[in-house]
Length: 117
Ligand code: HEC
Image (tube, rainbow, N blue to C red):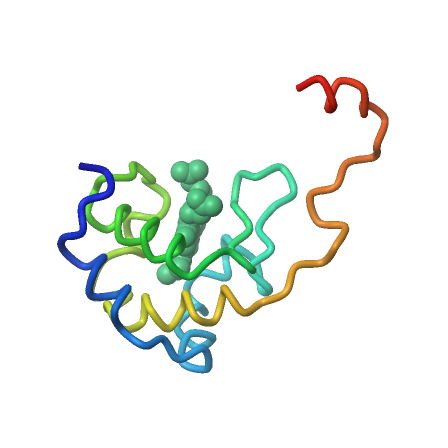
């Protein structure tokens, strides 16, 4: 059920996203996800930059459909705030953003534990 292709999701996946329009539509998201969509290092606000467009569309459509419980984002995933076309546009914009190489890399003090994990 979590991966059924119904509602807004298949429509947004089929739409051709325009990254320039996506950059404009992303303005309402920047307060939490950051100007460059890099989120917070501790993960409370996830990095969206560089994620696959299909993943971004699925997550946002799931929040909009109430399948992914994300209270902070409910007001921003509604159709009157982000249309299906804007969803495709935002995904096209975000997926094309580059991510700095250092992002998410720790200090390297616990490499043995990391290897075993
Ligand atoms: C009020 C703060 C807030 C705003 C505004 C907001 N988000 Fe989020 N968003 C979050 C939080 C917090 C999470 C992570 C919640 C969780 O882990 O379930 C999240 C998660 C996501 C995810 C899932 C990322 C992942 O890696 O799983 C996507 C995609 C996303 N947001 C897109 C957007 C878009 C696009 C907008 C604007 C239309 C937006 N968000 C606006 C707070 C916000």
